[in-house]
Length: 573
Ligand code: MSP
Image (tube, rainbow, N blue to C red):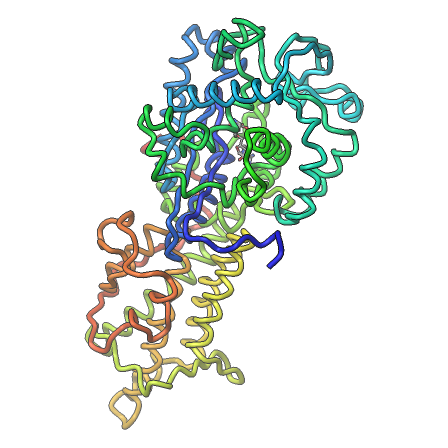
């Protein structure tokens, strides 16, 4: 085993960025959270003990300014918008285990403790600094970066020359250890191209990072008794990154426990298996975050295992921007969910999203195309056809599968596969994709099985055979085909579940399957790990005579000629 493949363990810890409360939730936030949610659901299905964290980032000058512009105290703005983010995460079905807010005492008190420890260890020191400041991003950029960006900030405004007497984090001290860590952990940042970008920036040499501010007050105060005296607030990025540790009580278990964090129970989740983020905040996560942890005394094995930085959603071919006003906001996504179902929105985000190095488009035409192709015409249609035929020809009772070794799966005139093998292969492949954080590819393994079912029906035409159902052997032949189809769809539904939690649970109700511990509660957990649940003709397979109903189609075909759903016409908007 190399240093890059840490030993498998049961607990699984996944996080999203904590979102700024000066903004309203939009597709970008929903995307990251949905990917994290699907990953969390997959891991739970595999039988792992998952902790999925999301939340809100509530301090900093931007929040202070937005609140001032509205004439409300920053805490009031934070409360209002944090509630909106939480509602957004619930609206997209995120199964998070905790929602952390950086204004909570459990977080603030541990951040102060961390800061104090870093001052004591000499990793944070007082100093004066002058440089180019990006107000929107609340960060200083190096002279080289400033020149490359034409002295323009991320938000298009000019960079400002600024100087401050502040506390500084000695990031420079950690350059060599970080580089060694990266060498030993080639999968630390994914996708690989993003890792190269980060490493290229090391050529400039790492600089000290200012980690306190005195020009505004909406932040966690630096403890007054430290050498800089009163008046400093902790830099919002140091505050924010620490959320991943404070939520588990990893900075100070005693303080955490006194604020209600079950630190002893949560310690096992550390370190994060994956911090899922967008590409624009990679530097903070891939460089500053591990360096802060190193400074706090964490050994290499206790550093996050992977920082996964996805790209951006654009909208109808254009970058989403405040000026264009073309953000796909939550009411718009809700309007899509009202028309096509929440799972359909999740499916689009998960399978068409910008998981890799390139940005991805959210377009209405493509949404309908993908919806019809994958969901209505494939998954829903196959389940419906199979359910229908079992009702019609076998009075709704699962027919006999044939001989125990009868799993031949004719998928075209010339190709016969083995159903047991294709199911096992899909499972294995999904697992391998998940290990590499290829969440979309893992889902496609479920989709692939559905397609094979379709092909099997087309190649064997049970509906034609049914015309001769009373001839010797024909009933048994149809029985075998439908058994294989139902059983493969059962396996497929498990692999699709992380993307389509509601629709798959609905199918399991139609088909009377006890996959969840409590059929009516998708959060009740699974009856067994995926390997057992999904074995073709295994312990959880359909039994002959098992009663099913065909139910309604899971996804109705969509009419591409309809105008796009818009927030204004949505009943819930
Ligand atoms: N508060 C910081 C993160 C601190 S984490 C310790 C922050 N917040 S944010 O509200 O701006 O959210 C940024 C994140 O939202 C991105 O990293 C990404 O996950 C998501 N997205 C925002 N816009 C996006 C798109 N257009 N497309 C996809 N995701 C993007 O940065």
